[in-house]
Amino acid sequence: MARTSHTLKLSGVRGGCIELTLTDAFLCVQRTGHFNRKEYETDTRNVLWAECAGTMVEISLLVRKSAKAAWSFVQLNGRCAHGEEGTACAFTDLLMTAAYAGTKRQRRLRVLVNPHSGSGNAVSNYSKKVEPVLRASRCLVDVTFTRDRGHATEIVKELPLDDFDAIVTVSGDGLIHEVMNGFAARADAEKAFRTPVAPIPCGSGNGLSLDLLGIQDGSDVFAAALNAVKGQPMSVDLMSVQQNTERVYSFMTQTVGLLADVDLGTENMRFLGSGRFLLGFLRGVITMKHCPVTLSVKVAESDKTQMVHALHASRARFLPQKSNPHHSQSPSYGSATSVDPNGKDPGSASTAALPALDYASSADTDGWITLTCPLLYVYAGKGPFVSREFMQFPVSVPDDGLIDVVAQEVGSRRELLESISTAPQGGNFWLEHQHYFKAHAYRIEPYKPGGCFAVDGEAYPFAPFQVEVHRGLATLLSPCGYYQAKFDFPSDYETRKDTDDEEAGCFVCAS
Image: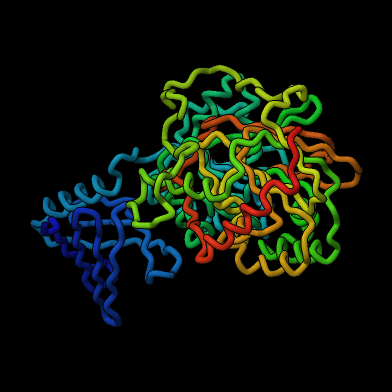
């Protein structure tokens, strides 16, 4: 079927001509001038605004100059011919209808900027990239530059959330941790968690932005700003971390051992960006310091094959099916949705406080296992990416109601060093000495002092703690409704599977 198209020709305000062609889903721009002819096509979703006033036409959009290029912000200004004002207005109306199909225009955004995040470029990124996109989109913006750790939590605790459509964090993942715990501290916590959060990547790791936007766009500030303007609500699991009488909320990761040392021990290298994690990892591999903890897990699944099948099943509603013998009869633990998976309408969430803990009592031993082997680190969380260089949880699903728990045995230095090359694609998942569980909850008991414990990259006391998951409690803005991390079986899958089957269970005993 031929595509319907509409064309508008303009005279550029700085000379030259602009020809615009609008089809069902794309806007094609051809610009001719004294020097060059420029042509590009972009999805109408990438159009921020279009309007006509008299003969003047203004269009703001994001374009990619080539397939692998970063996004660029473009403003087109031109005049239509006298007598063509009606045609120009009809064209911009059609373009705006396509650009904001299913999305509210002029969102009310509460923006929090952390000037100290990452290598310190958040303020510059906000003024040069984020603010122009939000202004072009006619968003109503209330911005605060945070002073110190905990400032965002205090702001969110008192925020009149009904006045805003989303909270935007211009920072690393630490500011999102503060926002989530600000929600949790409110009397209307459950309702507060229905307020979507949209991250703008300005930190060292930017794991959540990579999860939402994918490896190509996850570090692109323009792409993240577009998600703040047009992303759709996606329910995601949240985790409770209980330590003594304290309860904090984690949206991404908890870790002890080598990778906690890597995260917290390289704070003085923030100027290196995510490169600080690689340096810290190499230092840790040299020392091979054991993680002095006992790990107990309430396991839902320990079969890696089944986890990959479940991941594919969760994507089935979003992605076209491919003919693959490994994708048949896929189980599913949950799927990403834009509504509460428990059947609640996000717009009518109750004002109740947070859900109770189901596994607070250590007397609960049903279904728990304890690892007895020496460990290098324990890493648990939600979302595939920890950083651009490390996809630690490749089979993570936004709202399956389960925590992905990784326990890395003390293996060879060679194995760990070789894993660096495949870590961005999730290759660690298949390591011989890496246990991977889908869990309802887990417990950590240190048996020696002196270690590090990080929650969403923030330091907490190295003391016993327990984590459990709350399905679909929090809300993020997403362009697609699922984590954008590609992961599949390796080419030598059958050989690895046979080896895994022979060795499964050698280091794990029931509680």
